[in-house]
Amino acid sequence: MNFNITALVPELFFLCMVLALLVQSLGSREWKPPVEKWLPFGACAAFFVTITGFHLHGAMFWDVYKVDLMSQFFKIVITFGFYVVVLNASRQPTLAEGKRADYYMLLGFSTLGLMMLASSVELITIYLALELASYSMYAVIPLRAKDKGAAEAGIKYIMFGAVATALALYGLSYIMATQHTTYIAELMNKPWSFADQPMAVVGLSLFLGGMFFKLALFPFHFWCPDVYQGASNETAAFVATMPKMGAIVVLCRLAVLLKPGLEITTILAVLGALSMTFGNLSALAQTDIKRLLGFSSVAHAGYIMVGLVSGTPEGIGAAAFYGMAYLVMNLLVFWIVSRVASDGRNLKLSDLNGLYKKAPVLAFSLAAGAFALVGLPPTMGFMGKFFLITSAWDHGYNWLVITLVVNSAIAIYYYLSLFRHAFTEESAPSHAAPPDNGWFASAGAGMLAAAVLVIGMVPAPLFNFAINAGKTLYGITVTFAGGGH
Image 1 (cartoon, one colour):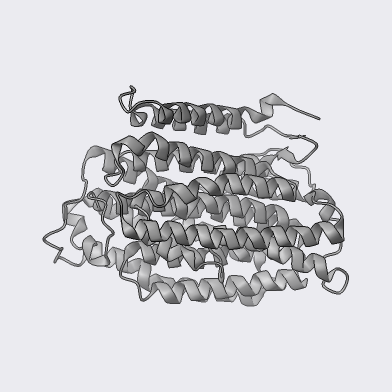
Image 2 (cartoon, rainbow, N blue to C red):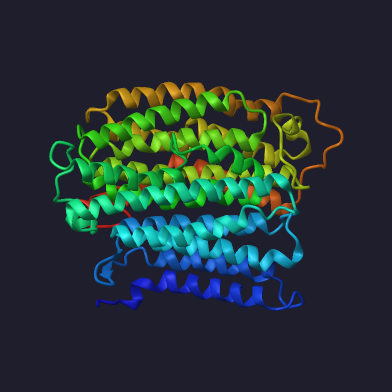
């Protein structure tokens, strides 16, 4: 068994942090220091440790676990997301004091599973890592001060998750029976047309269904708006962003099996078009902000399909870059939601009325997040969609690119409703708790808004990293991971 402990430093560091949370959760409530005092520093350290290991590479554990540019790109994104989620949840008002260490421990185990998922290059390993990332979510979602809606959301997530897991396992059995291997590198050399291997195509479609559940792609999206609405604002921020990174990295690795024109590629394209259209049209009717963001995530799952069906390293790189953009944009909007709902309530659009007077930094940051989700320049959302369009154009699915452009126009209405209520409406609900306008809220919102704008104006370093990561999946040698070709 080949083993390189240096390549596993990010995972080992994160594992030590999660084990510390486990020990603290098993101790008495009087243990010092409180978890919020040290965990943000640990999460920040994990992020920087992962950055320093971006150049690491190697295959381990009988080649089922691979450290490469794609895995390191997503590990950096995942650890950054965990850091922001920890900061956001540190002031969660709907979580009982005695459950805080348990809460962060569960989030940590889920994130560790996602980091392992980023390096998994064999289908059974992918499934095991996905389950590690999922089980914690089943326990975290209902934690909302005895809220019945949270309990309902948890039950729905478990039920739909069980169905998606069953589909993935059933599909895995078909792949093993027909292709006689579960290694992605070997599956690349196998036929994937329905005429040659109908059972394999059915099996891969079912296995991908498990990823579509995490991504909230139509028609595996039913849980998404209800879970967002039922979970606490801080938990919804995690569920809306982090599991999707795991699904995207697996889809990027499996996309090397697909070529334009194959039946399964066309299925992905059709599901992408349906997902973005259904998600955007459903979001138009929403007044609850988290339900709006839930249907928005269904639409964004469709956008990511545009890059995956192109059959090129550029398309996979564009999908990876857009996944990163999606995480940052949504963490920004959920940060604003959590700070405006300082009492932990679910926000309606009318709760944003007059925000520019009460909390100008939050209002400006919300505008940056809304413009980014629409895809307006100079935000990273615009660059992400631009890269998706250019990578997929003229590769057999131009109609899907046109569908993306049309749906982006539809999305302008409901995203700019956030801006309109924050800046043009004056009649705010009188009974609602005032927004958190302290330095902590403003600093977090300002830094995330700056990231959305700066990466939108200077996307080249991260996009080149993603492109080179896509090239390594096709066996193309790259000269420099973070720069040019």
